[in-house]
Image 1 (cartoon, one colour):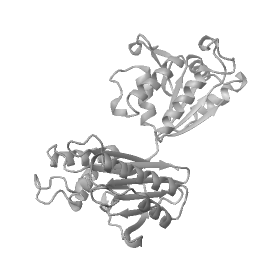
Image 2: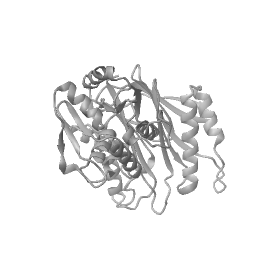
Image 3: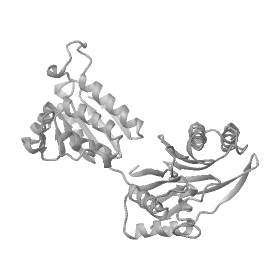
Image 4: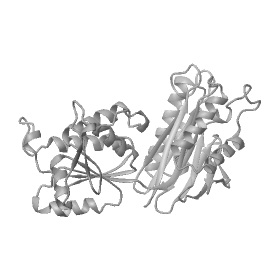
Length: 386
């Protein structure tokens, strides 16, 4: 599928609370994407527990294709009772998107309606109501196309400014107009949409957040694929085959490793030019090669990028402000939507740990660690050995 579902979420904690009483979780599988936003009763630790429990139950059961009624019954029936208010309560919004048909379904329990922006304009969805265990559940559906946006908020966003900058809070209609205004400026980033709404929420509260406020959204845009070719192929006779596969890839292309870079350069009849300005005490410089977007050293740079990604929690805005090979590689990885690692299995004895068997490669271990890290952050990653 050429389209990509760009998902982002951001929250503001109620003033004085260390934990947010809202919780967002999303999961992508081959056939569908499921997003859950839950707002726990009250705020702080209890609300966080209620919301976390609700999202875990919903997303696990929905991904197991359990019937909706059974899912709702389980979620409502499992919540613990609040000792103060004598009720168990967490609102939720579920958005499910079918990757094959692009059809989405929204299941809403006591949360504000979703915002659906089509071609830059708000499109109100038709709702139908079902009653499950005495609770009214709102259902709606539609189809997503490139450029569409759908977002869910907790009521803390709606009440922004209540009794301060605004008599009755920001309100759903005003938020919808605000989101439309972002599209007039031709926004193409879900991060920009979410950040803009949450920044305005913070402003309306004058920094004194009256209730946990969360916004999660999906923006449909063109996919940004990336291929990383690292390590020479196991069989030298297949070098050209894999180089051609790499060069014919429709997306960003990166080479990690001096030997791998030389294999690609030889095929192209080119020479790798080193950019000495990117050299650091613990990192070799990057290279420049026609037809390749980035060329870095291998083992040291991959090891460093894992360290950097862990430190910034895979948030591209928190990458170090340093133009070196590891940071540049990290930025490429985080800005990509899907990543294909082409991992050569020929052992470079220079980097091999003498205590390890010859069939265990340090490069392979590092790439597999990187792949796991990215998959844990919901990145679409394919690892192909060569």
